[in-house]
Length: 371
Ligand SMILES: [Zn+2]
Ligand SMILES: [Zn+2]
Image (cartoon, rainbow, N blue to C red; front, side, top):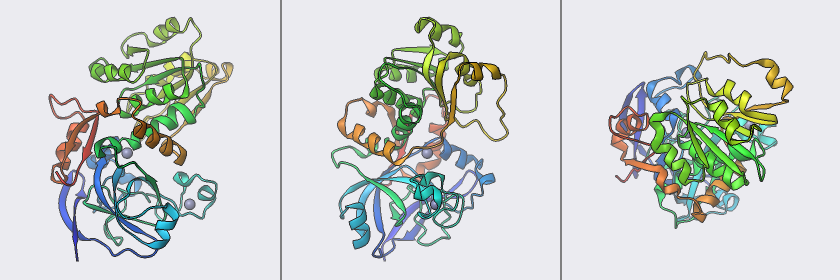
């Protein structure tokens, strides 16, 4: 029986490379050979042990942004997904139950039951004790359950570029689809990490007339990339952001404000001031448990008739648009990819992504099992 190497998290900040049997496929599932898997902020939180409160049970193979090649596929799965061995796919994290109200209305990412009756029913978060164990993208092979949301990706795209499907889908969801950004709109984005940068692309694709990005002074190298992706102006967060945006919009403000920053709450009262009457604010940054909203003048929201939306992930349509955009090559998205590591260097990869390695300016970091 062939075996697959996998990076296994056995506890907070503790990893091992372990070997697992590659399962035989049944009629309704498949096995994918992982080419690359992207990392994101939640992988760093998982590494730090911050997600344990959500019921995470080790050991786990992390990785929820995988791209790979169909190695073997059952006839039912092949028919459903229109796939055959050798096809390239990107896999969404969520494994919905498929039968609850959320799933039946197309909102499987809001499924509260989960494929296996657990809250964390998603790739990268399922313990290896559940057979066939290969539930994460940080492995040579990954199991594709019948409930997986799978998208075909052109073989012409390099794997390290294809893994950007996940941050780009988030940008499409947060800066385009959820706020319903339209031609001629002004969009202000707080944050210039992977998802801030892809929000710039999404706003441009939606037809925004003016795209402004706010980030910390030490993120200047990211703001330069934001301008490459089509941002008209960039603003440092220590400037008077509200005043600057008013100046750049002739006092009108923004139709859409997107906050993707982690941990800081400063963008939210600023967003309430920046948004024009009838505008939409998307809150998509993770601020950490126990962090409460303060310093927002309530009556401003009421008087300006603002829409404030929390969004945590991307829907199926956003993933499709993201993959089409990567295949089209319209934007120099490859500039986001800064680092690739092998399975045994996962800890170094996470520290690099988290900005904890001196001298490394990471934006997008991927794990390639063949390295
Ligand atoms: Zn992620
Ligand atoms: Zn469900």
